[in-house]
Image (cartoon, rainbow, N blue to C red; front, side):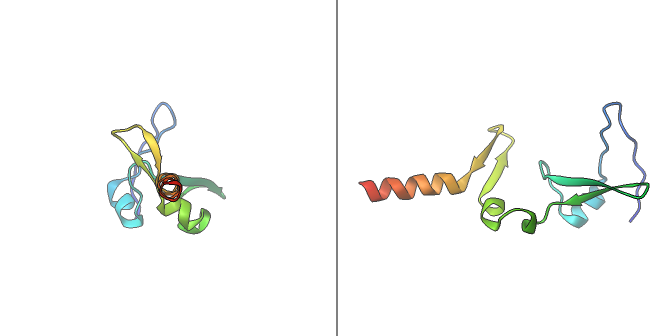
Length: 84
């Protein structure tokens, strides 16, 4: 699936929607950018690149404008229940 796009003045490139949907890149997804010969390769970070716990226990909220660490919140709640 080859699509033509333009590099903006700040070096930004929009990944076409069809490609993002096909490989599962969503808003605020982290990707790896690499060089292969004379090409630029953009890869979705797979859970193997980070621990499953970190990958599935954190999220980002546009509304809150900060990363939410669900694992930390759960641990704090668990520790709070033990102490009471």
